Image (cartoon, rainbow over all chains, first blue to last red; front, side, top):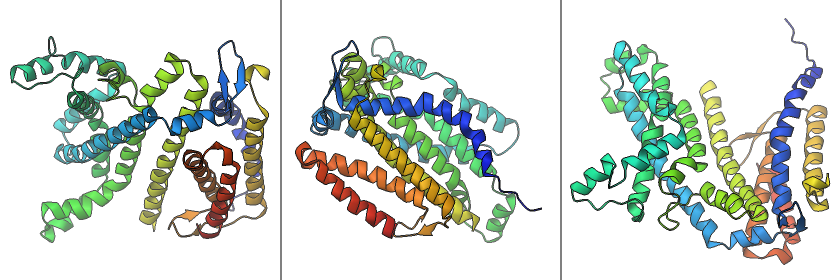
Length: 290
Length: 91
């Protein structure tokens, strides 16, 4: 049957376009508009030009937050991805225990961000928290409100606790899609466990793993609630991530122009990195299809 | 529209982007193309190259602002145009 080409069908997309324009595109344009102006409240705006961008590019505070943010995302990806793959490889493939594992794995994903933050905030406290108390009794000097290293360790372990399941579940889904014949062929060839992983499991998982990395990267790059509840960005500015700094600027100090310029740069970095991931992902798909 | 505090420069900026999008849509309809593979080793269409150009231009402008300063900002556009030409030629 010959396919009819009807470009008029594009008009059916119009309602969505209007809705997205109203809820996303125009608000984003407003942010761009605010970024070149200054406001003293009362909806009075004054032209400021590129002053906010220039100020931010030379602001130690912004570079510090960006550095923290990149370090945070890199560290949690470096832990969660291998750990997630390892967990997925250890999970039973079928039967009762597979279901039990799946349910257990998805539990952390169901907990709201601020609750995760609160759990860890209490859990890690030296006076009443189980973790903090135990570490203190073991003679380890641990105090996440005072110590740089303890604060970082706490927010990283918290994120790993919350989100490794997501990587594991996605990697598990990738593993489940491998036909048994592959494993049988590997057995006939007397392939080692490492060879099975390297040449069968890993390539088959790669597509879904890229999605997991993209999701975890974007989520961790925009993370706000959990570190805010636990450390509030402290001690000092040690764990101030981009979004925490942005909220301080926009809502705490009500520097709309400054915050808008900050948001745009934040958005550009996310856009650039996501584009790279997206391009790599679609090219992997194309290579697989060939 | 005064309550949204629009200014002429931002309006011009968005008009420029909107007209670029319209022009590229018309081009895509009038002259359909097959994606090609350039120096980046990825398949790109005209639209992809426009996206790479715009995103890269944003970073070029920011870098210029950071290293050179706001007084000479218009000259950053020249760098952007060179970059755009390079992207459309080689990517």
